[in-house]
Length: 295
Image (cartoon, rainbow, N blue to C red; front, side, top):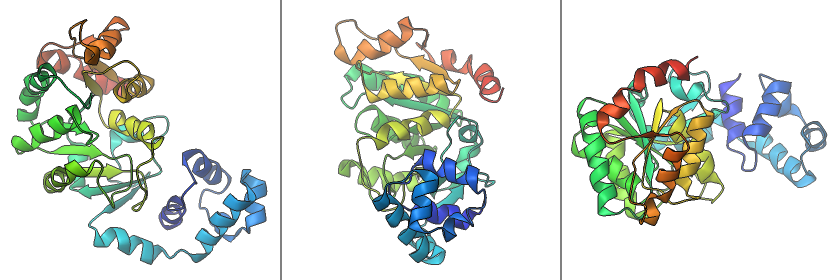
């Protein structure tokens, strides 16, 4: 796999994971694909004429140095699948990103991680549960992973930073912006003691369909994912499903049957997620979770 060609290909909007997989399978170095005309690209990879023409122009006109400088000037590290810095846990999932972009200290990928997600509108119970369960782990040096969304995600990142411990925020868009706007300051703090991470190109803006893709990275970075308050059909439950598909442990905080924000987590527990009442409930499963992740 040629890193520079992969990097350039990855910058082309509309060329997703499956399409890159097809191209790498046909041409592992991507050398021949970079020489193809639009009609050849269309025929080989079932692209529309417009998509093939756009890709052909992109491959012909893009300069690795110019694109790379955009990231380098923003202190963003480009990590391709197969690079030594690529997170080991993430590499083992079914569909690891071909390229990830990290802003911060990539050494934090090697620490014990716990992924945590939940509602954007937490109750006081949810916020207290977050602190009750995570503080002991954070103080033992665990790194939290979440999605920088409002609510539980924000509480998780802030909790780690308050203890001067690292946290990883996985974004559903490129690192050229921060969403939501209210978390711009938090994002700046994370860069100083953690990592902002994305599989999307620098200028890529938030799109609804990208956030479920982002969720597989959140769960993929850790042996286990903790869900704290989630309604039915929420993004947090998508993350839980991703974790299960990846063979990772799923933990859930129980809640009131009268509280809508707890209905999703209660259902997870009914369906086999581990009920968590204390941080030791998580610690007890982690040796097993690590071994199963690499089995």
